[in-house]
Length: 496
Image (cartoon, rainbow, N blue to C red; front, side):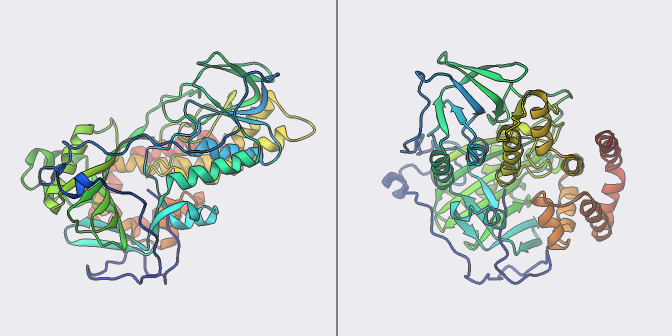
């Protein structure tokens, strides 16, 4: 999911427009450079009507042609100020930011030049504020949310797809110009001493640093937790597909489609969807190229992946979308909410393993891009100073730089939002988002972008309750007390 930029005259958030509403053509971008095969153009690989499960993706693993500054095993000593494990968006962003202050950085990854596999969506205004708007390869001037068959909300907030090649190239260029070293290996073990840490790689190389940062993703075993990891899970199946046609407006990105009319002839699917709903997320690039993703916003335990795919097949069949060719596909599983890592600890973390994923939405990339410079400042303040703060004082400062008290408290509130969504069925979810997108744009945009203060989040909650329908208020009164008590208890613990 992602963010957009206010290039259009403001209108009341969540206002319901007629389907023939047209956005002014003030916001456009070139079509991504994707060339379907000749076979797909002539229908040789076409699926059965509305199905795509029998098609294999055409795309192959892609690698950037880029001249990195590689670590030389002959170098002595093998010491750095900071070692970053992982060359994903979080790891490269932090390496870029830290190295700009003369800090010696080494980034370790099994394949530093491989392209990231997932599609990232962001609100355009978030990337513009970060100076990264040139890393979007497609933008839409509006987004839409289909609440049900009778109600659609059009949101005047532009959305964009991150150009994975553009973003990674930009980060690598900045890293290269600032002297970041790269080592192509998998980290097997970490060892911490009083004033330094060391890593051992699968090629036998051992490297040492004053600080090791774990940016290796959700599955990492390097970052410690001291509380049960009771995450919710967002799970999705997505395809970038060449299709005969599709029903989506080319100037609107479909943020959420909660309609379930496609399950009319699928009683089993419909019954399960009424309890744990999924929605369609769609990025139309042109009349024959579209990214489609069936998504469970949050569930605990995770919804079955096959269930997700079966619901998507039924939806595409109902929409009349015949997939001719699957260019890319992806399985997305995002742990949401749950406890923060142990604070402080000897290894620092950024990205998915650090708790920065939005607990209510799953948004990660824009938030990580924004928080990495803050963490970098804390690191530079310690390691770039003449005092050279290391060991426990370093760990305390960097962890609290990423997670000061105010940010921990607002995260508890976003986690309360996730716990509430976990208790809502399809109708309750529809009522929630119907009221949510009727809020003042400052509040619903701020909530989705993790930029509201605790006071503003409290005001949002009161506004949401006052604007909600009576059935939605009943949901809040009957289903929110337990999550609310849990949140208040956690806030009290944070304040101690």
